[in-house]
Amino acid sequence: MKKIALTLLAAIFGFQVFAQQIQQVPLIEVEGFAERLISPDEAVFNIMLEEKGMKVSDATKILNNKTQRLADLLKKAKIKDYKLIADNYSVDINRIYRSGVSRDSGYVARQTLRIVTGSKNEDLQKIAEAIQESGDMSFNLSFQVSETAQKSLENSLLTDALRNAQSRALLIAETLGIRNISVYHVTVDSPPSPGPMFRIMADQASEQSQIKLAPDSQKINRRVYVKYTY
Image (cartoon, rainbow, N blue to C red; front, side):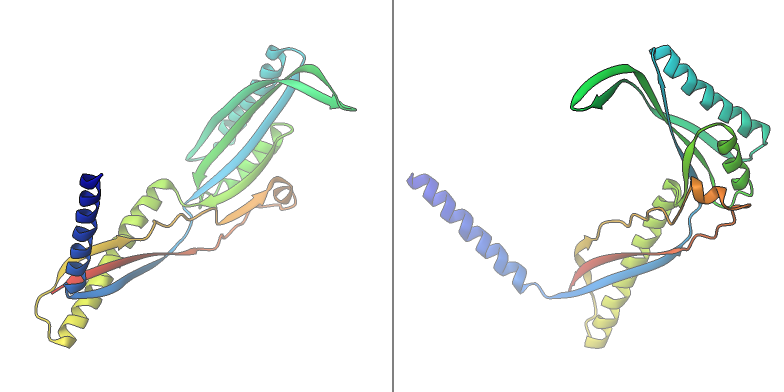
């Protein structure tokens, strides 16, 4: 017990000494800030498919036929620069609840489809028409920043924020007559996560003769906190 107590006291004493040393270090603390205006570069059509059948094969066949019909219509419309992505495929028992009693009635197959293209693609209207012609499909269209553009933006913002912090520290040092400064500690805020900038539902799209959208840009910023010693 004595050894444990002595070890604990030594640790506390060491921490206090370290804290006092930090307090004695001369510091210049600055905040670096950077901001950019970013526009979406990606348009995403999200389609939820759900089909029921008494057999698994029946439900999946209807689902696959709809997906294939959509792919054929997109190809027929000669849509440029797009990707049709199918994921989240599942087949479950179709369980119906009535008056507190459950009853199994065949199967339900589900599938998520995404059509990804550029936000300035002139064929957005053709894509919406192809989806509507494919059958009973509901969809929404969102505009967002692609992963590639977002990573590039994060790096640029971080660089600008660090340079902003450096310029502020140098200004303070020059004003106070401090000749040399060096980085002591850097804290970086979490990177920005721009979400969808515009969204339109299938029923809204059907009311418009043409999809002419100009989604708003977003202001994205980054902050860093830098301590310089001299």
